[in-house]
Image (cartoon, rainbow, N blue to C red; front, side):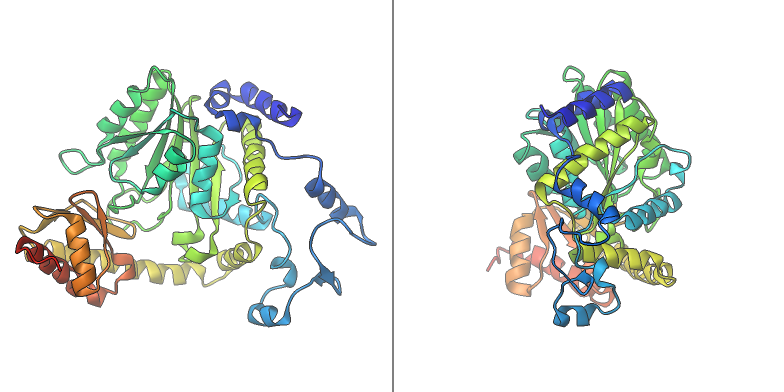
Amino acid sequence: MNPLAQQLNAALEKGNAHVYAMLSGLGRQLYFPKEGILSQSAEAKTKARKFNATIGIATENGVPMHLKLIQDTLSAYDPKDLYEYAPPAGKPELRSAWREKMIVENPSLQGRSFGSPIATNALTHGLSIVADLFADAGDAVVIPDKNWENYELTFGVRRGAEIVEYPLYAADGRFNADGLREALLARRDKGKAIVILNFPNNPTGYTPDRDECEAIVAALLAAAEAGIRIVAVTDDAYFGLFFEESVHESLFGRLAGLHERILPVKIDGATKEEYVWGFRVGFITYASDSADVLAALEQKTLGIIRSTISSGPHPSQTFILHALRHPDFEAQKAEKYAIMKSRASRVKQLLDSGRYDGAWSYYPFNSGYFMCLRLEDVSAEAVRQRLLNAYEIGTIALGDTDLRVAFSCTEEANLEDLFDAIHQAVQDIRQGITT
């Protein structure tokens, strides 16, 4: 094992032996090179004032070389903020700005010990970092039965982890904290679990309220006190899109410092929050009372980034930093939030109108991009196909009964037509019309 990896492991074991024990075999071997091209280039950047012949970019007239036809479309930005490699951890100014944003939007983070956000190539990359660092074959990844299908690829296929599901909803339609607790305590003999808490939930658009969140925290705490080491991942992809009386912040702050056997990891990003899906800018942030643990986890994370994508896209990070600093940022974001909230309210109004009774029920939703119908007596896939082929409407079939509908990409004026068409497709299938 590389001596740098050994040093990081020793720092983790000293800072919190439980976090060290959470590492996968790969996670224990990871490190960020202290010597080599990046470190020598960084040293040259501060001292090589005459000529800097280190890093693998081209320069011209003292700035990064570039094509005028590209720069003409980006003339508001300095070439040095576009064409150079971004640091593996991301632009330092962006990391600081995102951390400040996290504290403002999550009051429970006040006084908590957590690291600086590390830039990722959007949220899937952050989740894959968690998988590489902590998931070995056979480790449990505990998720609700209504979940994003990419968890299976990221943790199950790539790392061989065991996907353990529990029902998202209890009988009363609220979050099933008892199911989460039971799924965790069933891993007592294994001593370790990775828990993914995705709110607002994809695909159902559900976020728990304060009481439900306290029950979630209590379930994790009970498992930790039972001797289970927990990597608690908050997948906050749709953070901020809270439309009703749910909690309006991430569970990350509530979990930080909760128990020495719980490692909170926040995965978030500009992707959905700032409506910049193609920019691919996300973040991964760790919480720990130990500065040594935070430093070691950052170095291991940088080792993964260096060995996979090397660093994230610089232009996208510059654009996001510009947005966060802009005086119109909050007002423009509020405008988009109002549109999304109005669409969600219109969907609920339609569904509660009684006009679709007997065709479906719907899972509780109060946030995010999506909602899910539970079809009564027809196949979700058959309805999806009928909608696509006869009505030129796209939806997502999940399992036998569930149909996910994204109101995020449907204008409010079109929502009634959309749900009327879904209703008609259900009637078509009931009558045996499938082509």
